Image (cartoon, rainbow, N blue to C red; front, side, top):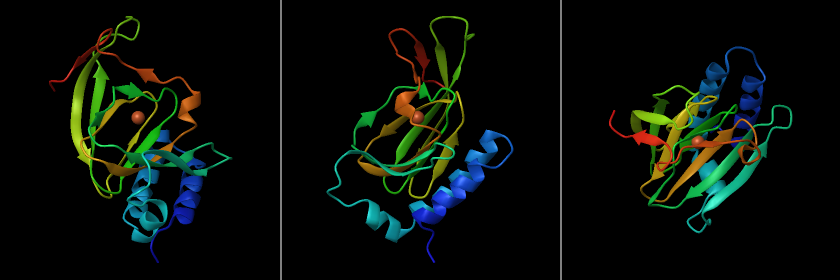
Length: 175
Ligand SMILES: [Fe+2]
């Protein structure tokens, strides 16, 4: 049987509630998410060509406070580098591509303006997933419209997000 949303949520619940380093646990959830993204039945039940841009909550785990979110991304959009503070996020594509960029801070945290140096750039395509742990700095770009599933460690709208701005901070694109 194809790997469905209910089974994914149950697996994620068990893995996140388990022990060990958080990065190992979210990597394990990201591996499970891959199976959901390529399940045509799930995709058909969750998205259609006229689903409006934006996000919808598919599941909230009350015990561990993580969310499974369905995003319709508009094309031609590039976000700014950010981290999710003390929380984490897993990204996975159903179609199209999310262009991910990873950054490392090149100056001490104690200095007010951040200098970010790009450390990696790659595309997440159909079935690809990646887990970003607490404090990990990344940015997303959607060259074309696409469907994305994101799993977040908490309601990220309610916690402090760390956005970096080119006017105040320096973002160095050369690897
Ligand atoms: Fe993010």
